[in-house]
Image (cartoon, rainbow, N blue to C red; front, side):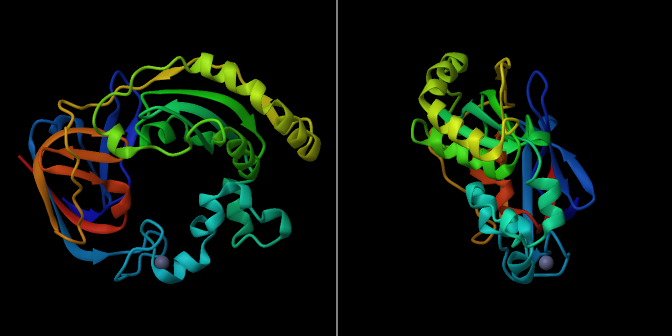
Length: 271
Ligand SMILES: [Zn+2]
């Protein structure tokens, strides 16, 4: 199978079911665990947006002109609180309408410890799976991406907002009582929430009372030492596939973050 990589698709089941998009095809990954898998980078990178060949990948799979031009590659995607749509300076207002000016969730999750995160309303549970969370709980539904960023900042003063990916890949996180965590965090941001509601309106923030979602990953063995494969340094990534967690393939020879290599053309071979 040969084609450009995109991030793995996943579906929530007893264990997460993963597939690797390779060009127009999809490689089912769960059946390959315990088997030998080889991914070979051909040296070609084709922009995820315009399809043109690019020497280097910018913003996870884009050519340089697309990286400068597309809203999805703007800094405000990494820092949602800096959304500048309201100022009329969004790079692609229509894309903003569909992706940023829509409901977002603020959630707590357990990746390698307690973490706060945000995502577009259509991206659950995908976002949790992409981050390798073993538990997750949506706590607020807010009107826009910017608002989710503003709430996240308030919560990030109390809990982490980044995943420790090395720890995440070394095993299953110790279970947390996310409901209890939410109940103790919410009163601490009450004042800030009241300010935001005053600024953005009564319907801007909705409190949720959801159940905790448990997520199990198809991993036979966790590595004790993490070394990373990198197609830019070595075009051949191969080994016995030990498991899959987040956007990482875990081989007996090291791990690879598939998302980092979006748009890389590869050949996939397996036993
Ligand atoms: Zn492009």
